[in-house]
Image 1 (cartoon, one colour):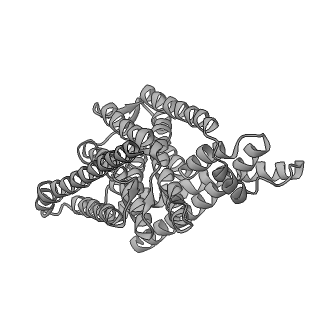
Image 2: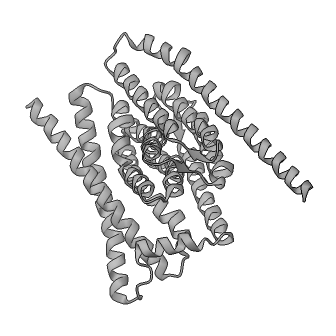
Length: 379
């Protein structure tokens, strides 16, 4: 009977993931075409509906979990997804091809990602993300979306608009048949998200109980990786197509959405005072999420690219983090030595490497400025 339960849990997990990804795709396609029919600029659609649409599975799973009082899965999904997005998705994409990083990401979006990561940790220090705090977080995503719309109107990028039109066939004539079809796609996508989220959560909880793992560990690993599949597909395909800035922007935008919208709504709908936060998440997982976000700045700053060796570094850290979660879950005594090794050797070595890279980049830029000054004076 136990083996049957395990296989049923895996089946629910896999089936739920497939339905989630299909639902997100339908929702994005239908909503994008409806927005285009209403005359909304393609670039605005790309920055809002498409970017946030890849995080729809996280929203569906976390809200479903919060409503059922399974806060560890809801919060673990958000924190784990953000860690997975940066370390695994960017790492894998950079291994395929070095990724370009837009200046706006370095100047605004990554600092914002760091800021909201720190904010949610501070809000959680009392052991809860309360309902009013969830409302504040959700208000933040509304302000961020307004900023994206205003910013996009100032910088009309015709190339991006053309690419988006080709992707979503926005040039097709508007008719009532197409409108009905697009509404049906959007509504059907939402329905599939709800259904897929229920299957996925049921499978994750059943698997956690069968394996003797906590719901927090399952949320940080299997659920987080599963609901991030749309981001994986988007970033890897973008990297393969040479649209390397899209690969990076998708991850950063999704992380901001996860914290402000997904966690915000989960805290609002959670029964009681809000979403309770496990002590281990406060001590280990949220600080690690913040550290990962901060690590993006020097890496993104150096030449505005993520090189292959930096991508390999990201992947290595995700493997190390997953090993830590497994050792902690099975109460392995070796976790003490493993933690000390990571803190005393690996982390300092990484910091030194990043500081050296930043120092080289600063010297290179100064040399370029001097060379430009000499060139101008010669003229």
